[in-house]
Image (cartoon, rainbow, N blue to C red; front, side, top):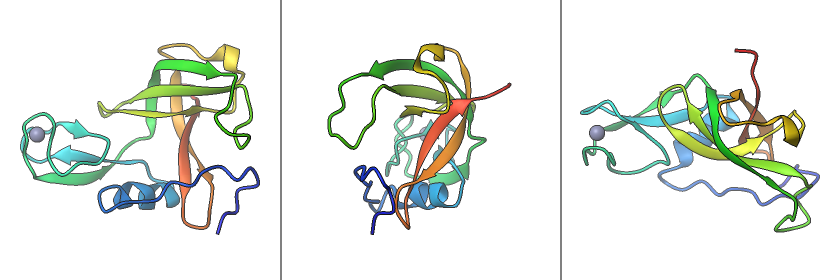
Length: 137
Ligand SMILES: [Zn+2]
């Protein structure tokens, strides 16, 4: 049941992504790490993309990173998205990247290399979306 007043599409956790979404619901940004090569892995996978090991474990990240790249969206795909908003790839301190939104700042203030930290936005009773906001680091 959606508690989101904007009725945004709600992600459906899969076997692979369930630990990630559970972490988000609990306020933790999690990613996989390879026990053989130490590489960080995201999105969730069965095998390490660096060395093909299947020995992946879940880790809790710091939630800190920088904007790697971004775009400002002015035409929403559905009316559920209020424009303008920033779609960004954030590079996390642990060496992995994720696509997300930059929130709690003006779209014109976002730049590549901008320090950001995760903030979680509940979208249903069970799912919280990981967004990023400017950080004072
Ligand atoms: Zn590996």
